Length: 255
Image 1 (spheres, rainbow, N blue to C red):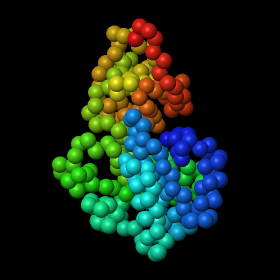
Image 2 (cartoon, rainbow, N blue to C red; image 1 turned 180 degrees about the horizontal axis):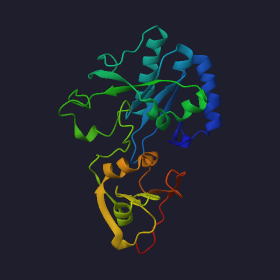
Image 3 (cartoon, rainbow, N blue to C red; image 1 turned 45 degrees about the vertical axis):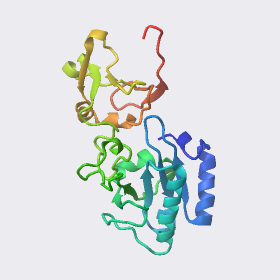
Image 4 (cartoon, rainbow, N blue to C red; image 1 turned 30 degrees about the vertical axis):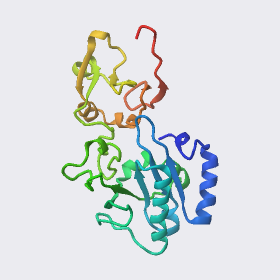
């Protein structure tokens, strides 16, 4: 996630200074990241690890003010000596719903804790994800969890090999060159209608093929680096494993 989306587009340097100030004063900084047309909002803490020797906390898809309040409430309990237990059912965090904390796989931390990584620099830290239930009080892994909420809170204790927000069997566009010649994907386009294109760069219109998203990611795990590509955004690289350069898609009049 880009630093520009965090804390009302404050510059990363200014945000770092504010973070240091608030951690010194209150013991933590709460970061809110607003939702986009594609990605859910989330809110997380910075400072719990250093101040209280406790994992940081993150929660997805809550109104910013409510998310901020909940992180502060949980932090207040931690300040008072409570140790959050993973897998325990909490009934007092949300008014009418259960909640649970899951340990975040360290390989998922860098995708969501941008300001935290800048604050901690080379210091490792752990984090927990606060999980909420749907309108029927079901957790995402429970039977009959409401489908519309499935991708509103990605489960960060898992899915390190498939980070995309869509179903694994989603059909996506790729090229004959990738399917038959195993050429690398060098350009990825996330269309404004939600379609994904994984292109080798040397394809012609007749070379386009359709495959499941999971097959693309299974053969090239580095594509997870651009899982958060927005609608109408593209990413390009010069070679497999190279740095992705992101841009807004420019459509010609003929397209």
